[in-house]
Image: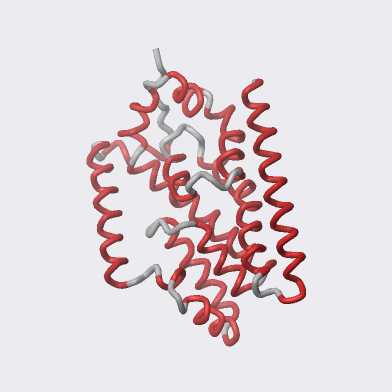
Length: 238
């Protein structure tokens, strides 16, 4: 008999609202935001053709405000607009350079991942979690053994750059992974990927440092894949 996903204190308020009502509200909210974004062009602040130029101009005159604006826009783009994570890394690398760009991108992606997790936990867990728990494999991996497998699950999905970043963030909220380990491991395992993409993007505008940026990005990719493969094998052995 499969074990149902447990509820923690963060779910207490959520139980007051019917599960499928929250799912419907989530879908409606995403649809509304997509329509508003198409009308007002909010995503152009990060992905528009002149977004980089405008941010570079802001950086030259108000560097602190430019950095803060980038982080806020990236968090909103990650959580609300579900923009592809690589877009934020490219902007960070081109505008802020390899080192500051990596730091700002990592900070924005970590905050965005945590907020998306909380959204997924409130809106989706109670409705979708029990259905996933009916599958013995998913139940064992995501619920009954969440406290044992969370580090491996997060490592593999974060380190291997083939899993959709935005989908992961919401989906983890459905599992029984606790928020604290999720935030810790996400911040840790998101860093290599954000650094890799940011360094690669910075390489196109880094002048004489371009080769070093590209080499560092390639090394990070190789190390990330190797670590993810090793952790995956260890998880299977356990």
